[in-house]
Length: 405
Image (cartoon, rainbow, N blue to C red; front, side):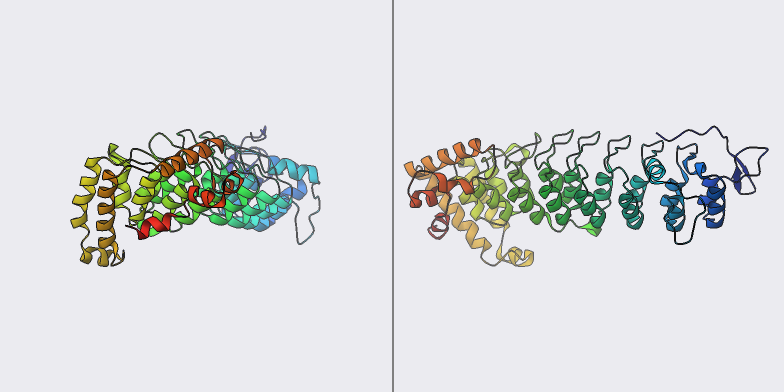
């Protein structure tokens, strides 16, 4: 909390005096008025006024930071170009930097909130506390990432900010980075030990946080690098099937028409969901995705389509005419590919899976469980079986199935 002052504030002629019978000007009001000359005069006469707080428990440093008055902030901290008669020592600077206002915010919090990267760098260099939470539990790292201050966030990570700090809603800095889609910050957080599977109060992982903010992004602020963000999390070893009760990474990827990420998840060993959006089978979502090969990959990894699902896919084909696919820029072969996939599904309905395919599904499921639902790709070489079988379990033969449709 802010440091209490025994003085009551009384505004006179645009400034505030410490007392009715005093001619001494108030430092906070001089700061807010951007009167550097008065600030210097006041702190020379009484350096203790630096710790004076107002009704919001804010010091003059909070206000100088809010308005971006860099020179005054430097004067208050005795980081000066000209001489200040009574510079405070290092300990007093630390006290001033760590004063919290009525919201629990230090000057460093305010610098991040207001995008004052120059002042944030100054306060960090003067040893401001990097892990003090405000009254919502947000550290300065939370705030810097939320405001997409990349340089400040990277510096905070390097200097020891807690990359797994959680606020009142259990958001970590990595959730904030996923929200903004900043891959550089995400990579830095992960290198400094950020938990890639942390869950918020509503069970959202960083993966699903990126999905949610991609879906609600306005056209003017397009979240353009969703696949790169997801790929970063998968390669960092996030759980591949973790759900918030509504979505999994696989269903989220299909909902965004991201065949690349859906395939990446499946190849890495995610569990095959049985139900997609609106309660129907996930095969329908996969068929609607712009990559028909996802349908084959799902089936080869153990999904058993019903007759109704195959019939639904057949009915969907006329919706994707060649004119439509050209206009959508999906490729002239999409219409033909969908027809081939439906024909392949009909054939699969007539012929049961081979014993080898059943074994592959079982082994991959066991490996998924053994790794804690993380990527199984690196583990194939450790299987005590011939290389050809390792490749078969790793789906390196999937191209054969695509060409044999």
